[in-house]
Amino acid sequence: MAAPPPPQKPQASVAPTSTTAGAAVSEDPLELDQFTVSSYIDYYIRDEKSLENIDVVLENIRYRLRSAKKHLDAMLHNSRVPDSDELQEIEHTKTSIQELYGRIANMRAKSHASERAVYDITQDIKTLDYAKRNVSETIKTFKRLQMLVNASDQFEQIIGNRNYRDAVYIVQAIDELTANFSSFERIPRVAELKSRIASQKKSLVRSIYHEFESGFDTQGTMVGNAATLRHACLAADVLKHNEREHIIEYYCDLQLNSYKAIFQLSDD
Image 1: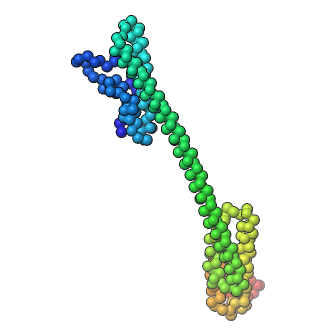
Image 2: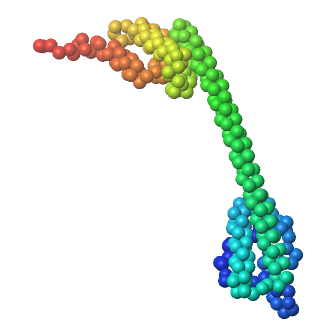
Image 3: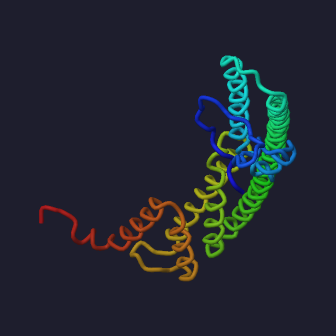
């Protein structure tokens, strides 16, 4: 669509359209004999997108209205009495411009009202979207909390059964689920659940230590079940790093007991 013309620079006077033979016909749509307000509006405001340029169109109309008034004032100042055709044309032009300005101003007001209505609707949609998102996040959080509670119950049974192989997977699942509740530590139910899981991990560590204490004699020879000890080692790997290091240190000390007895420091 063609953009509305920018405001023209003021001239000394604006000559009306001449109807005499040989005179050039003006190309200004406001000065055409067949000018109508509806055709002018339809030409410059064809669709909703063109309403963005409505301020420019209004400024052009204001300028033309001022130009018509200046032209009339100039003729009165020069003491030249315009003939009836000129007066009629000037009045027609002023009336058309004023009518055009009023209709476009009305369209502008309606456009702003529509824009405000659309803005209010989009704000309501955004609010509903945020509410939907919050509800979805809440449901997801409750599901994860329920999964964490179930995992903690299973963890309790696994420790009681000394099932270290399954303990590896349940500890990994619990750590992954617990990471989702880092920002909910002030909630009593979540804090209580995390405290329970921490206590269960300590019980698992004590059980692993007991397996090593009963699985090796004082000479460092393995007397327990090899598969149980291997699964206990895997379970220790998924716990905190310091727990793993303590078990490794305990096993090394156990293997070096006989050497310490032989090579301990003495006067000899």
